[in-house]
Amino acid sequence: MRSAREEITWQGPVYAQLQVPVAEDLRNIRKRGRLVVLVAMGSSANRCLVLDVSHSASRTDVEIISPSAVCLSDADRETLPGNVHVTGWILVHRLGDLVDVAITHGGEGTVQTSCSRGILLQLEQRYDVMRCVEFGNVRLVSSKKASRTDWAKLVVRLLADRMMRDAADRMAELCDRLDGPGRCADVIRNHLKGQG
Image 1 (tube, rainbow, N blue to C red):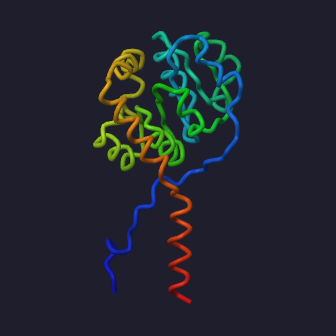
Image 2 (tube, rainbow, N blue to C red):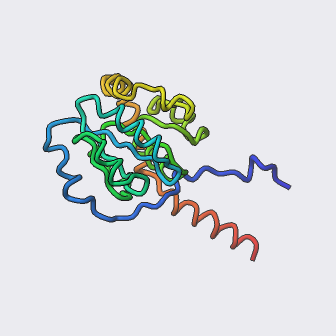
Image 3 (cartoon, one colour):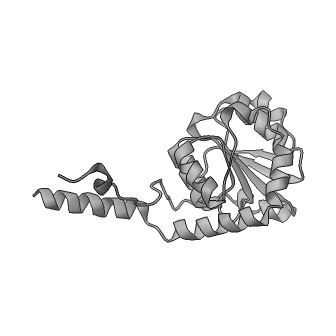
C-alpha cells in the first residue's frame, strides 16, 4: 500500500480557460493612458466589500475594471467614480496583459486565475495564496483587514515594487506552460487503465 504522499501529484492550475474574446471597451482601456486595476470578487463577493475596495482603490490615478454587476444595484453604481468600470462576469485569464494589479476575493477559479496570471493582491484561498506569497508575486490581505485597508496607497506601493512585478511575470510564464486540466485527465486515464 502506498502512502498518501505517494498518491498526490501536482498538476497545475485547474480552472476554465475559455477562449471568449475580451469586450472591445475593456481591450481599449489602456488608451486612457493609465494603469489598470482589476477588482474581481468572484462568486463569493458581497456588495459592501466590492464598494469598499472600489471606492478606496479609485482614489489613485488608475482605471478599475470590476466584474461585479451581479452584486451592485444601479444606485450603488452611481456612487462609483468614473474610473471604475463595472461589468458582468469576465474571464480573468484573458485580461493578463491588460491588468497591472488585481485585488481578488473569490472562489478557487478566481484565485487560481489571478495567481497564474501573476497578479498581485489576494484576500482569501490561503493555501494557494501563501505559495504565491512565498514565490513573491502576491500580497495577502486578510478579509478582516479588507475594509480598513487603504487600497489606493497599497496599489501605488505595489505598482512601484519591481521585485514583486518581476515575480508576477515569472509566475505567469510558469503557469502559461502548464496544462492543468490536460494533466489531470492523463492522471485519471492512467489510473483507470491500472484498475482495468
